[in-house]
Length: 393
Image (cartoon, rainbow, N blue to C red; front, side, top):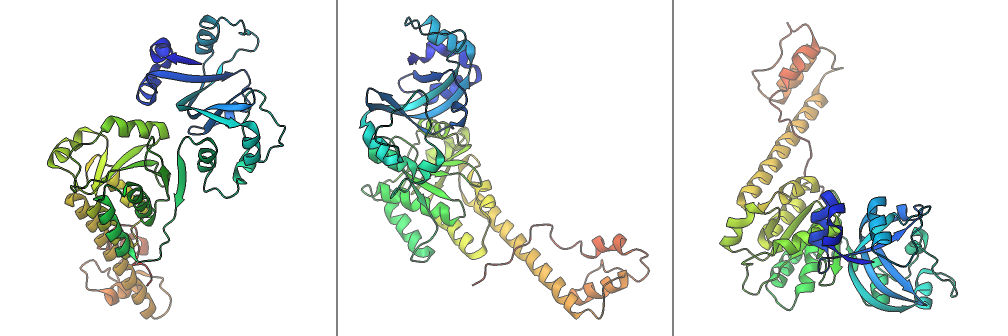
């Protein structure tokens, strides 16, 4: 069923903005069922195919599942005069779709893709099992397999951090593609590769109607990639980026560009987006490669609204230096322990370990009655940060 948003607006409550920002021409597309078993296994962003008379005639993407008896009755009884409303078995389990497109796929082609018998036909609301989806042969992802079949929708390509060359090669490629108007897809793939190198598993999403890169861990983020021949982006379509974020159900959105104009920097704090230039992305790659900075720390800086500038790099460098200092302190303690003569059991033993480590005004004396009382003061100079040394070479 297709209805204008204005017709169902009173029922959407807090979800109204989601439907407004993701709808196709201010319309809502909904399919309903009276049986909730299979319906509950559907998830947001799943692909939905609409079957009719021997073929699939439409493809969409799941935007939201909604159990709403009142809205169901309004849609299916008060607005449809086909007499199929059943009080005992109402169509109250609804699936809302977005990005709906007409397709023409013969049922036998679909059966061959997912391994159904050639004579199999959909009966009501049906979900293809994960086992069958995982057996799609020769496809990078389910989305790619369905896109190849229907010639519609996005193709999703998982990107790993393996590469034949060192990070500088990726840096050069990023810079070159970011200012080449004919290499937009290549730039998208390179950005996905870069985030994967930062420790954030990334998917490159092929197709102009969706976001460009999706990160699901350690946070759910969509990444929009903007190549510009003149080397900088003069404006950002915030509404369009936010639409993609909402469609994907992501928590954050990042825009990657070769550079940004001063106007973008001035307006950046008024949006919930984060924009980063390619050179700064390369700086992050260098620090990840040199110091194995955890992806959580990278995304903590990358998901703050505004433009990524030198002040954020300074924060990252301070974090790295704290880790280095903490690691060096830990190594000094270990070396001092190695020099200890016998078991470490008393405050006097700890005193001599600290003396062997470095000079300190906080060294406990033999008058300290309790080891637990003075131990914190003895090592109070050590930074309180997570400890990590440099990666093995």
